[in-house]
Length: 199
Image (cartoon, rainbow, N blue to C red; front, side, top):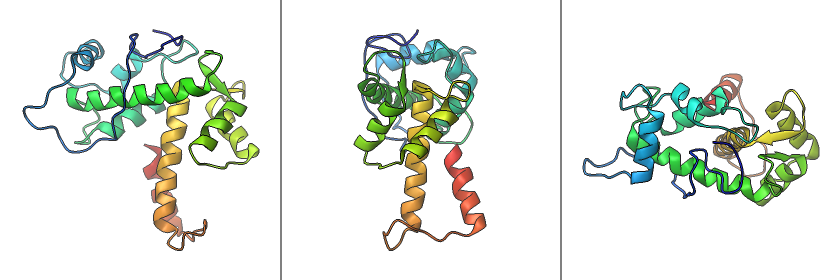
């Protein structure tokens, strides 16, 4: 299960998009056979729920390493409707589709199929998402994502960056009442945003 042509962290072709989590599924909701099969493989303790440790054991990034703890905790928290620290098969299906959506975005910018993207590719990705970040800020993001080499961003770190930037952007927009790109924020409100956007 490593990054390559047609990569899917679960080792099969496929993909799709699912919006962030919503309400609990109706009692007669059905899960796709593919998502159900992968859920069964990831749910190692057969509890009917997956935690971030089980998710981490199942996901491999382009460097041949498991996804980071941070990425797995973030993804579990996004789809954990009952705040139990785990996801059930319905929540997993949403996560499965969400990961595949981000993989498609990532592959768009990983033109050489190396399993990571460099600064210029990250700049292009954010520009196409509507962000106009300075080269210094992009360099900062790469260094935070690759603390050893300061050169590249793996797929799991790309997902974390995108989700965190999206969360911070939403929090900023809520406070930018005049829509002029600046806000005044109290210390506790700042801390609430920072902590709330991290996981």
